[in-house]
Length: 200
Image 1 (cartoon, rainbow, N blue to C red):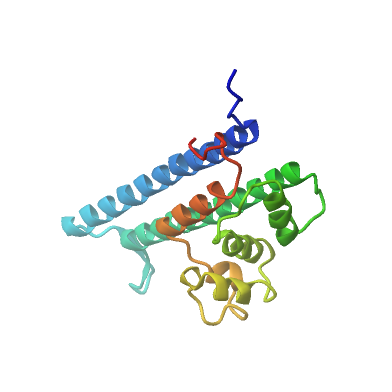
Image 2 (image 1 turned 30 degrees about the vertical axis):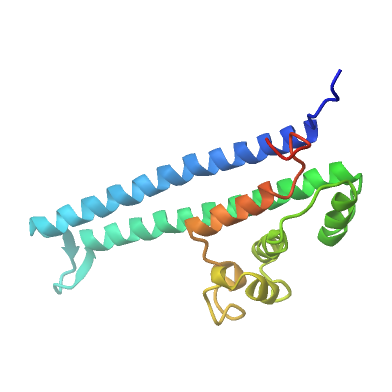
């Protein structure tokens, strides 16, 4: 009988990543659809030429329908930005929890887990350390981790005054869809394969 070529750890890991990715895609699509709906409603309002709003007794505008659309758009866009950050944290922490199981090391830090997994034949993707820097920056919002992220993944750090801005390093991080793709790919490539040959 031929030896079994199936690694249950790889199946569990891939399944977990697939669930996270599917959850992100579903939630992001809902937010993008809402942003599109608000933008269309705003464009229709502006094209109508009809003004909606309220003025005070001196004739100054208190609120304008266009302002309300802008507020709604800002909130929806911020929701999408926060969703991306939340799933970045979730994906990295899923790898970290999984690596603790593979290695039996429930206290090791990132580098310890990478080395421990390598000893078990599980290679980390080269970009995983940048994903770790991203997760630490988002989680701790401190000057200890932000500069490491700026060095390892400069594309996701947009602010030059992260240390003094209202929301610090958390606010300095801007994740686009391509960055979400990259971080999921790095995490997915940092676990065991379902098949020992590497074909899942």
